[in-house]
Image (cartoon, rainbow, N blue to C red; front, side, top):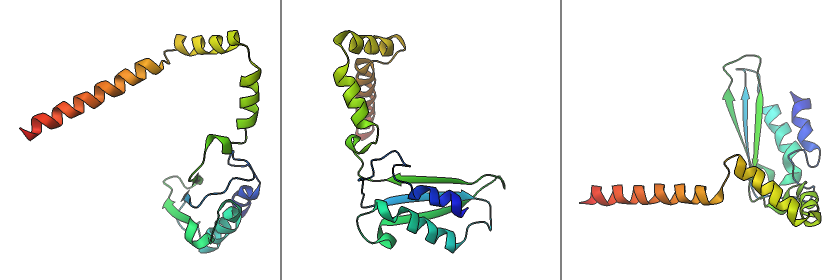
Length: 142
């Protein structure tokens, strides 16, 4: 288990740039009963210390959940205050986008539209749900 936890010491393992820092990290561990110990929690604190801006004990929260399957262990790390610019692939994606032609941009947009991805459609659904919920709450008040 310690070797799995130590993977998080590798810069950019979470997909962020090495300069990314946050003021809070949430860690959820799903492990078989009696496998997780306080020593492993301390390893998590040490491994993730480079991602936080202040004291580790205050900025990293570790929650352990018993796994239903005795052979499966999962570690979920959620970092707060991340921005698109903090993603490791952001600079490369921005460069590729800036070098692409108008035709390529329209082509990628048409690909999304062909597959049913439309911002207009999503906005209409959100507005419809919002209006529907508002009308229900107004009827309940009467």
